[in-house]
Length: 135
Image (cartoon, rainbow, N blue to C red; front, side, top):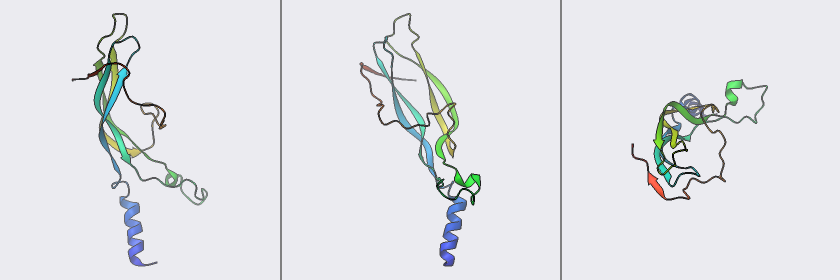
């Protein structure tokens, strides 16, 4: 192997995580309740991007467990905000809490606060008249 190839490989392994493109990204959530008259469009930030992963199909006996990680772009720091859904009757709780990503990291997906499955069937749109959330 050429020295350039070996140095490139080492550089990629050492600095791979820092080159990952995982960062807060703008996202619009559409929220509606059956009882309420309006759909609320909320502008927030979520964690999105590319993280370096390692193929877990390799020889598991020859590799360390840490070399088999499947990292995702997930929250490092976040806070929750609460919005009021307009047009709700008095017997309905008109509040919706949502996460705001402050910073992101590449790591294992935590199901305590993240949806770790990507569903392509679900859509993010309103079926009722839309109001924009102003905080």
